[in-house]
Image (cartoon, rainbow, N blue to C red; front, side, top):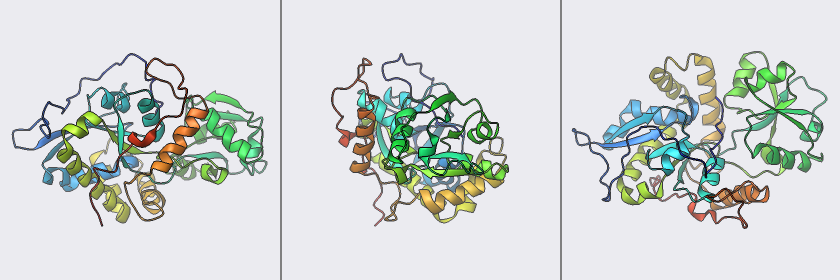
Length: 345
């Protein structure tokens, strides 16, 4: 399971031919013959445990019960952020950096549901590297990454906060993070502990992790669901029904990880062949990632959105629609909304 890197906001858009459920009237999305409303959701990668709640709700019939005919758009060459902002998909799986970059550049995209409350990425090294006991020991070492612009400043901040200088070499991954580390191609990487970290352990190549939050880096919504203001304003009732079903799916996954994993696997047998990995990932997500410290699921905070955008602005990573760097930090109050979440009190 690899993370995508968002396309530049000013790049020409190459759009997939997918059904769009937007129209001129409020709550007047495309209606199927059986009276249900068609809603499209674009995936960010092949089906995996970040998507469990979606597939649980689909398998349990909760979208259908809400009057929604959900069409899951497979991951392709066009990022979900692009499909959402160009109104070619109603919802999509995204992540905080992707939404921040796109929204800061004026694209029509808004985060509506936080799938993970805990940052699902760590700085990791081989478990047997006794010479690396802190991120400060990464100075002069080689990092294997994905080529995303935010990686270097993020790592520099973490290393400096740990007492290092933040100077390291970079190579781009062409294999899994743990495989690159054990092959001696790099010294450290930033894998997802809920997938690659577990995969590494199951493969007999365990990793030692350093949590970003332990070294002063702001918490990140590593997986979220986004939509567009256009869709939300035109279809508020549909959006609420959709997210109510989604929320029900992730709450089920949080309380019943093994059963949820089984439903995810059953819907994606050709992709999810390592059932042990899927089950362990589901268990870890349920234990540490779906719920916030206060027990909430799906909600987002203004402070977290501002902190991450301030970091990206300070690192010179945010640009406008013409590709020019922003001259001031963006107002992130409209980058997300909790308004369409179900009342679970």
